[in-house]
Length: 279
Length: 346
Image (tube, rainbow over all chains, first blue to last red; front, side):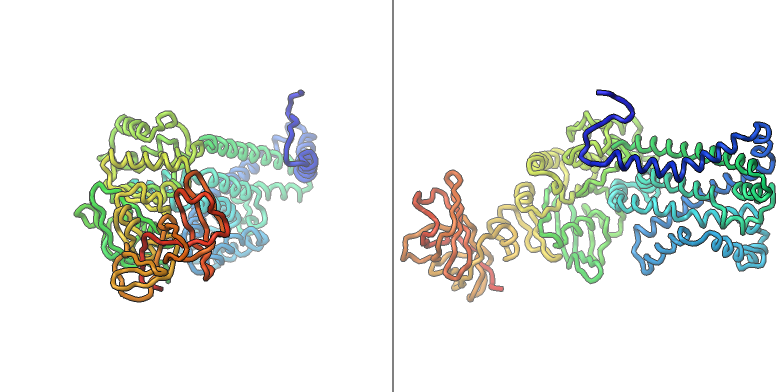
């Protein structure tokens, strides 16, 4: 028998060929072909020109802002998302369903709406912005504003990935830890956190990926000052508006490669985590 | 170490799980909490462990009041029904957990912990699988790991919630003997919850029979079986056939047969008698006894299980040794009860 990548094995589940083919076709159509087009377009640029745009100080500042704020937002979402998931799973309180529905709202809301709402709230003449301005804190039109918007769009990812795992874990292991003499903190740090870590990591990765690509809500609150509060996706649009399609693709490809590398790294981390837990 | 609960009341919303329960367990005893689901036995166990807070009542271990002591300070070993092993830790790490979470001052050295873990792995006969994860173990192995983990902290009391509930029959029997052995060798005081009467009678020094949040009887397995205090206990422990009878001057009259009552005395009048399948004899026609028609007979070796229907249509199950060879379905029988436990008619 021939051995190879697609070894034929008798399977009870029929239709592998058909479903796999369709999956590949859809993936190609929806993901691979458009992304290849970006690469092809970028590849037609002379190397010098590519570098001049993709590695210009303005572009570098935009990458730094995009990756930095996305990472910060994902980190904060991980903490608060875990807390929210905890509350939703472990406690029964009036209005639990409403809170649960609220968590999903950022999924459904057009991001521009979120952007406008957040800007109105945090602008120097807004409710919160006004109060914070008195303390000398500026949120709207600064990188901080970008983080606020990204936290908003990323929250449901962490909550929804951690929630089922936490529910599945049940209160028994905590009780077991307590009966063995562990304090609350020890029970959390040594029993619960390691058990939900893979899910938490997945949620954080999703929130991070979402934040990296976010455009709609950020452009309203960021102020979009070049070198200061201009995110990479916006820079791409700016290039396009100046009819510099080549420059836009150059930045796009750089973003694409960087985010792909990061997601791959997170994926690797998860695989390592799961291995450690064996099964 | 002895263990006691006084007037413990626990409610979950409108449901009263424990309705004023008092129980004393002597040092070194092995006690079973037996009852149907919803009887409050698991709730009582969890309250003893400090995993549940009662509305009122006191809990004491030895001569120390533990009512307001949280679970982690009670030094009570608890084995969960589904083991609740930490799945991201190896077997050895699971067992070591209780020692490694101790404050630095009282924590044994790494070497001492490793030695204790090895000792416990030996005790539960799992020395070869210390490096495995719980997911790689069979049910019986997980159960023993859970026990070793609970024993690692040298608990004064061992509490087990349905310890054999999730195991198949063969493993269950082996593990039962083994657990009793561990209890005796380590000089533990243990309480376990079960809904399986055979398990309770086979394993425990004393059996606590519970129903609807109350204790119905606390006695040795022998007494609980032979002299059930209430109709519930009798019925739950396989009371057998429930037959209407009459109490009269200390004796029980069933279809003209008069027998002493094996249950607590009851006033004259109508009563519910319980007669176990093996507490019948066959008699010749005309003799006083319960007239019934044989519906089914199933012979296994020298034993036979009979199913008879009385004139009033109720079914009586009878177990006979060495029944007459010609006994066949359709025969008219006279069943003479040889023992009865009778309780006030409900």
